[in-house]
Image (cartoon, rainbow, N blue to C red; front, top):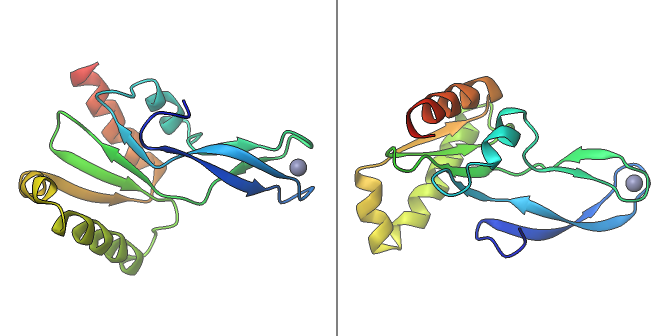
Length: 134
Ligand SMILES: [Zn+2]
């Protein structure tokens, strides 16, 4: 897992016992390659980490970019992005990233970009994807 693109090792401090440990953080998922992650995503368990000392479970406060390849859809799932303002901020970040990359700019012209904060909405998209492509 650790060498897969889209996953980085980050340092976490347990909110209960304050122990510091390392865990994988998922930042990017390409559904055409990482289909085993769909189950975790749907269960709301993506970026779930557990303290090795006291077993406290925490959910990382991070957004996940999901590429619905071969559908022309890229979604950012961020449970914190509940307001239009926050959604707009994520969209601007996306626009900034693609603006500096010729290949991505071309891709983006034919790709829909969505910001999703609701797990229910994400599940609907994943179910539709699974029905057609898995
Ligand atoms: Zn702990």
